[in-house]
Structure formats: C-alpha cells, structure tokens
Image (cartoon, rainbow, N blue to C red; front, side, top):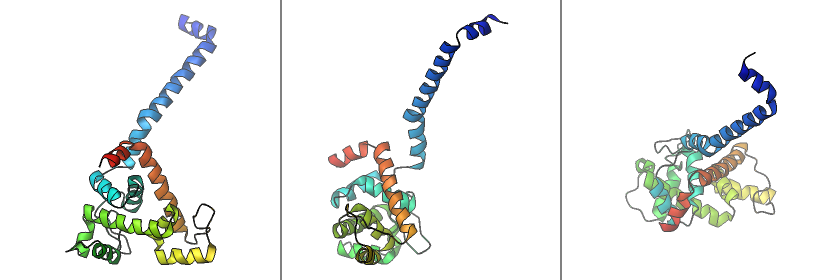
Length: 202
C-alpha cells in the first residue's frame, strides 16, 4: 500500500474534517458569489432611473415597483397579455389612458403605452391610487391583478384579517400573483440594496 494511502488510513478523522471544511468553503462561495449571480440573471434590473423617478413622484417603494414589473412582464417593454394589457407594468389600455388624463399628460395613445418611462409612470400612479384606497400592500396588489371592483366585493363578502389583508381571495391566480410580487420584491431588496440608497438621493 502506498505511503499516502497509509497516511489517510492513519488520519481518517483529520481527512474528514478537511473534507467538511472544503465543503463548507464551497457552499459559502456559492451562496455569497454564485447564487446571487444566478439570481441576477433571472431577476434582472433595468429602467432604474425611470423606476426611481416614478417611485419618488408617487411615494412608492422602488422594490415594490420592481416586483410588479418582474411579475407582470419580466422587464420586457413590448409585453402584451392575452387580454390586451401592455408594457412593463401591463396596463390595460383604458386604465393607461385614464391615468394619463388624470396626470394631464397630452398626446398619449394606446400605441404609446408600451414606452417604458410612460408605462412606469402611469402604472405607478395607478398603484398609488390602489394603495391609498385599500391601505394594505397585499390588497392593493390583488386589486392591481383582479381589478378594484372585484376586491371591493371580496372585502364586503369575506372581510379582512387583523393585518388588513383580505380574509379570502377566491381567484387562485390573484392569490398566487400577490405572493409572486411580494416574493420578487424581497429578492430585489436583497440583490440590489443600492437601489434604496439611490432612491433616497434621487
């Protein structure tokens, strides 16, 4: 038997400890460097200036805006849903045009609703209105997905939990949507901590 094999047989505990240390180092390297890089490839961030400007204008958490955009369109400005929602924040044309009128933005047509800066600004104004009406992030997100009329009906029928969220959301799609946006918001907070600093300086 070779000398190194004899040494290993005589030092099995040491070898086991070294193997554990190496494994721990590899895992730490993955979680500190590899995993964030992989997550950033999925949770991309674009249109930062537009997001920060609208988040500041409408007093919104920029990470919430990122979560909505990621969930709605994965940051694809040309996105169009089966029901006709448009752009980064997937605005229905009627909603987008109504928000543009409320903000007194002239010359807005349906074709322009996919413009990133305009879409984000209109979507943020709409989200701000929902937050002001419903008071709770999760309820506002449910209204963003299912429409405020349905959410008002659910609140009348099922009431609220102690934290202000809806006691029951009968649409599985909307229930999943709220969870997906809030989960994405948390991921963006962890991956892009400098965004909050930039928001304070914006």
